[in-house]
Image 1 (cartoon, rainbow, N blue to C red):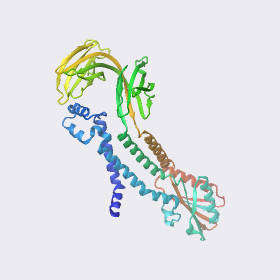
Image 2: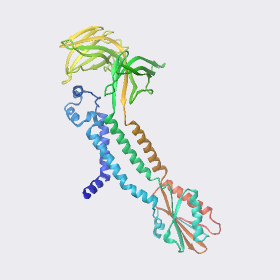
Image 3: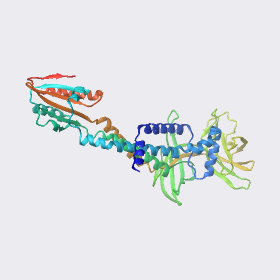
Image 4: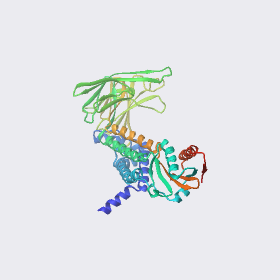
Length: 464
């Protein structure tokens, strides 16, 4: 059993696994950008209709993408499993490294060999007219001004040489552990949001009410919408006055802007868009209403002459396009104040019928009766619950702290040895740092300060 645990532990902390997992997440990020993501559905039939609506775009790959969860990539088992594997890898690597960081910070190696002073990347020798103990004290005073701590080299006690170990920012390397912990917190926050949160687009015509759903029991009514523009025609502000109801009772009301959401409990309502919608109703042959409401005209034709909205009445397998003249279009083939219904098969994408309708007129196409009532304004609201948001902020803060510690509080280590010499001492200073231009400047400045503040009787700087 111990061997199995050790094998799993070695696997999780391997560099190869980390590289493969990070590359996999990068591929998923690319796929999530290139493949259209499905909105949140409350029933399987609506989701199946949506999958069929994108089949003309992805062809034979549609079923494959759907099976693999690529249309809901961020909550798919593949993505979440890879994220969990990355979190476990980070935890294993951090657990493996923490004892090393702790030992280096609390029980550093204070004694080094003579060869270290000869071969270190950064090293210097100073000839000072002081006995070894006073020369060591002189170096210590200079290091203390730079906030170095020191520990004696106990192997040299009582001999002809005096030595010590000095360092500063010994807790700096723990910034990597904090940054790794931050990544785990961020991944956990992402998982919490994916499994327990939601984001729903609500297109609400002015004067109408829409249910938020997702078990919130909330409905939202848009009482008004106002927009303003600058001299160039660019929008400067748009605001919706929303009223939120729960079980028929008003629980909140507020003017909602892009950066001023309305919050009701854990649910936030954000202003996202606005535009023109077509109020339509669709009934079957028996007269049962299949759809009644506003269809946002979110799309436009390639020539810009027509505004287009889409609705798929539940259970029909037919996508209905509502087409009206675009705002300001003077050469559209549809009369102002009227609309055209275009009907398509969801399964094949085949155009089934094209039916014009004047305002207030009911027309028929096959078994469907379609009524174009009028155009009206709508406001686009995003309803969101994001339980992981707080933890995302916590993880982000930890990441900033960890990265700042890692790069701004680098652990600097020095070994100093003063050896008795004729007329004084030879002081050797060396560091285990590799090539580091920042530390090189610091090291040279430190040596020059020690040399400049020493007694003037005999000084000599020998840089290897």
